[in-house]
Length: 195
Image (cartoon, rainbow, N blue to C red):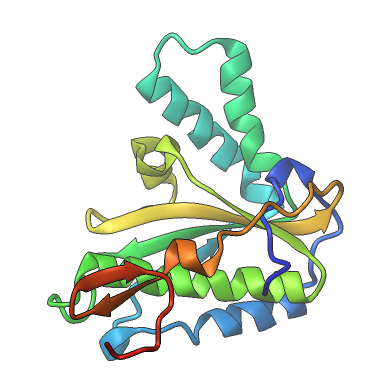
Protein backbone atom coordinates (compact mmCIF):
# COMPACT_ATOMS: atom_id res chain seq x y z
CA UNK A 1 0.00 0.00 0.00
CA UNK A 2 2.82 2.38 0.80
CA UNK A 3 4.23 2.08 -2.73
CA UNK A 4 1.04 3.26 -4.47
CA UNK A 5 1.53 6.47 -6.39
CA UNK A 6 -0.20 8.28 -9.20
CA UNK A 7 1.29 7.68 -12.64
CA UNK A 8 -0.12 10.19 -15.12
CA UNK A 9 -2.18 8.60 -17.91
CA UNK A 10 0.29 9.85 -20.54
CA UNK A 11 2.86 7.57 -18.86
CA UNK A 12 0.55 4.54 -18.87
CA UNK A 13 1.04 2.44 -22.01
CA UNK A 14 0.15 -1.00 -23.31
CA UNK A 15 -0.07 -3.73 -22.59
CA UNK A 16 -2.78 -3.28 -20.02
CA UNK A 17 -4.13 -5.76 -17.52
CA UNK A 18 -6.01 -8.73 -18.94
CA UNK A 19 -9.79 -8.99 -18.81
CA UNK A 20 -9.41 -11.63 -16.08
CA UNK A 21 -7.21 -9.35 -13.96
CA UNK A 22 -9.60 -6.46 -14.42
CA UNK A 23 -12.53 -8.67 -13.40
CA UNK A 24 -10.64 -9.64 -10.24
CA UNK A 25 -9.93 -6.01 -9.38
CA UNK A 26 -13.51 -4.94 -10.03
CA UNK A 27 -14.65 -7.70 -7.68
CA UNK A 28 -12.37 -6.19 -5.03
CA UNK A 29 -14.04 -2.84 -5.58
CA UNK A 30 -17.35 -4.33 -4.47
CA UNK A 31 -16.00 -4.87 -0.94
CA UNK A 32 -16.06 -1.10 -0.34
CA UNK A 33 -18.21 0.06 2.59
CA UNK A 34 -21.80 0.62 1.44
CA UNK A 35 -24.24 1.74 4.14
CA UNK A 36 -27.59 -0.02 3.71
CA UNK A 37 -26.22 -1.60 0.50
CA UNK A 38 -27.64 1.15 -1.69
CA UNK A 39 -24.93 0.52 -4.31
CA UNK A 40 -24.44 4.26 -4.82
CA UNK A 41 -21.62 4.03 -7.37
CA UNK A 42 -20.82 2.32 -10.62
CA UNK A 43 -17.87 2.09 -12.95
CA UNK A 44 -18.19 2.51 -16.71
CA UNK A 45 -15.47 0.86 -18.80
CA UNK A 46 -14.55 2.88 -21.90
CA UNK A 47 -13.14 0.42 -24.47
CA UNK A 48 -10.77 1.50 -27.24
CA UNK A 49 -13.62 1.61 -29.76
CA UNK A 50 -15.38 4.29 -27.68
CA UNK A 51 -12.36 6.45 -26.92
CA UNK A 52 -12.96 8.78 -29.92
CA UNK A 53 -16.47 9.52 -28.62
CA UNK A 54 -15.07 10.33 -25.18
CA UNK A 55 -12.37 12.45 -26.79
CA UNK A 56 -15.02 14.41 -28.64
CA UNK A 57 -16.95 14.86 -25.38
CA UNK A 58 -13.79 16.23 -23.72
CA UNK A 59 -13.25 18.63 -26.62
CA UNK A 60 -16.92 19.70 -26.56
CA UNK A 61 -16.70 20.21 -22.79
CA UNK A 62 -13.77 22.56 -23.29
CA UNK A 63 -15.67 24.40 -26.01
CA UNK A 64 -18.70 24.70 -23.66
CA UNK A 65 -16.71 26.53 -21.03
CA UNK A 66 -14.33 28.35 -23.39
CA UNK A 67 -15.78 29.17 -26.82
CA UNK A 68 -12.45 30.78 -27.76
CA UNK A 69 -10.43 27.55 -27.20
CA UNK A 70 -7.87 27.05 -29.94
CA UNK A 71 -7.66 24.03 -32.23
CA UNK A 72 -4.54 22.91 -30.32
CA UNK A 73 -6.36 23.14 -26.98
CA UNK A 74 -9.31 21.18 -28.35
CA UNK A 75 -6.93 18.53 -29.73
CA UNK A 76 -5.23 18.24 -26.34
CA UNK A 77 -8.60 17.79 -24.64
CA UNK A 78 -9.54 15.11 -27.19
CA UNK A 79 -6.24 13.27 -26.73
CA UNK A 80 -6.88 12.79 -22.99
CA UNK A 81 -9.35 10.04 -23.90
CA UNK A 82 -6.75 8.09 -25.86
CA UNK A 83 -4.25 7.52 -23.06
CA UNK A 84 -3.82 4.39 -20.91
CA UNK A 85 -4.97 0.92 -21.94
CA UNK A 86 -7.76 0.80 -19.32
CA UNK A 87 -10.08 3.73 -18.69
CA UNK A 88 -13.09 3.74 -16.36
CA UNK A 89 -15.50 6.51 -15.41
CA UNK A 90 -16.58 6.59 -11.75
CA UNK A 91 -20.24 7.58 -11.30
CA UNK A 92 -22.13 8.19 -8.04
CA UNK A 93 -25.91 8.14 -7.75
CA UNK A 94 -27.10 10.66 -5.18
CA UNK A 95 -30.61 9.25 -4.67
CA UNK A 96 -30.73 5.48 -5.24
CA UNK A 97 -31.79 3.35 -2.30
CA UNK A 98 -32.34 5.03 1.06
CA UNK A 99 -32.65 8.80 0.47
CA UNK A 100 -31.43 9.47 4.02
CA UNK A 101 -27.93 8.32 3.06
CA UNK A 102 -26.04 11.52 2.42
CA UNK A 103 -24.25 12.25 -0.85
CA UNK A 104 -20.95 12.56 1.03
CA UNK A 105 -21.33 9.02 2.34
CA UNK A 106 -22.04 7.79 -1.19
CA UNK A 107 -18.96 9.55 -2.55
CA UNK A 108 -16.88 8.08 0.27
CA UNK A 109 -18.09 4.60 -0.66
CA UNK A 110 -17.05 5.23 -4.27
CA UNK A 111 -13.67 6.49 -3.06
CA UNK A 112 -13.13 3.28 -1.11
CA UNK A 113 -13.99 1.21 -4.19
CA UNK A 114 -11.56 3.25 -6.28
CA UNK A 115 -8.81 2.86 -3.67
CA UNK A 116 -9.35 -0.92 -3.75
CA UNK A 117 -8.81 -0.83 -7.52
CA UNK A 118 -5.72 1.37 -7.22
CA UNK A 119 -4.19 -0.91 -4.60
CA UNK A 120 -4.94 -4.05 -6.62
CA UNK A 121 -3.27 -2.49 -9.66
CA UNK A 122 -0.23 -1.52 -7.60
CA UNK A 123 0.01 -4.96 -5.98
CA UNK A 124 0.08 -6.56 -9.44
CA UNK A 125 2.74 -4.19 -10.77
CA UNK A 126 0.55 -1.88 -12.86
CA UNK A 127 0.40 1.90 -12.78
CA UNK A 128 -2.76 3.86 -12.18
CA UNK A 129 -4.14 7.37 -11.88
CA UNK A 130 -7.28 9.32 -11.12
CA UNK A 131 -8.11 12.32 -13.27
CA UNK A 132 -10.99 14.71 -12.99
CA UNK A 133 -11.68 18.32 -13.88
CA UNK A 134 -14.41 20.54 -15.23
CA UNK A 135 -15.28 18.12 -18.05
CA UNK A 136 -16.84 15.79 -15.45
CA UNK A 137 -19.74 18.25 -15.04
CA UNK A 138 -20.15 19.10 -18.71
CA UNK A 139 -23.33 18.42 -20.64
CA UNK A 140 -21.21 16.71 -23.33
CA UNK A 141 -19.87 14.09 -20.91
CA UNK A 142 -23.19 13.70 -19.08
CA UNK A 143 -24.94 13.10 -22.39
CA UNK A 144 -22.36 10.58 -23.62
CA UNK A 145 -22.72 8.47 -20.47
CA UNK A 146 -26.50 9.04 -20.25
CA UNK A 147 -26.21 10.30 -16.66
CA UNK A 148 -29.44 11.03 -14.82
CA UNK A 149 -30.01 14.32 -13.01
CA UNK A 150 -28.91 12.85 -9.66
CA UNK A 151 -25.82 11.08 -11.02
CA UNK A 152 -22.37 12.60 -10.67
CA UNK A 153 -19.30 11.77 -12.77
CA UNK A 154 -16.52 11.89 -10.18
CA UNK A 155 -13.37 11.04 -12.09
CA UNK A 156 -11.68 8.79 -14.60
CA UNK A 157 -9.52 5.89 -13.46
CA UNK A 158 -6.67 4.89 -15.78
CA UNK A 159 -4.47 1.79 -15.56
CA UNK A 160 -1.65 0.35 -17.63
CA UNK A 161 2.06 -0.37 -17.93
CA UNK A 162 4.28 2.35 -16.49
CA UNK A 163 6.54 3.84 -19.18
CA UNK A 164 8.19 6.34 -16.82
CA UNK A 165 7.89 6.83 -13.10
CA UNK A 166 8.73 9.83 -10.96
CA UNK A 167 10.23 9.33 -7.51
CA UNK A 168 7.62 8.61 -4.85
CA UNK A 169 6.60 11.95 -3.35
CA UNK A 170 7.10 12.45 0.37
CA UNK A 171 4.13 11.30 2.39
CA UNK A 172 2.79 13.34 5.30
CA UNK A 173 3.80 12.19 8.76
CA UNK A 174 1.16 10.81 11.12
CA UNK A 175 1.56 13.93 13.26
CA UNK A 176 0.43 16.02 10.27
CA UNK A 177 -2.83 14.16 9.62
CA UNK A 178 -3.96 12.97 13.06
CA UNK A 179 -5.33 14.88 16.02
CA UNK A 180 -6.39 13.34 19.33
CA UNK A 181 -9.45 14.58 21.20
CA UNK A 182 -8.64 15.35 24.84
CA UNK A 183 -10.49 17.08 27.69
CA UNK A 184 -8.72 20.26 26.59
CA UNK A 185 -9.84 19.81 23.00
CA UNK A 186 -8.11 18.33 19.95
CA UNK A 187 -4.31 18.24 20.03
CA UNK A 188 -1.90 17.39 17.24
CA UNK A 189 -0.64 13.86 16.85
CA UNK A 190 -1.51 10.41 18.08
CA UNK A 191 -1.83 10.28 21.89
CA UNK A 192 -3.00 7.27 23.83
CA UNK A 193 -2.84 8.91 27.28
CA UNK A 194 -6.50 9.29 28.32
CA UNK A 195 -5.83 12.60 30.10
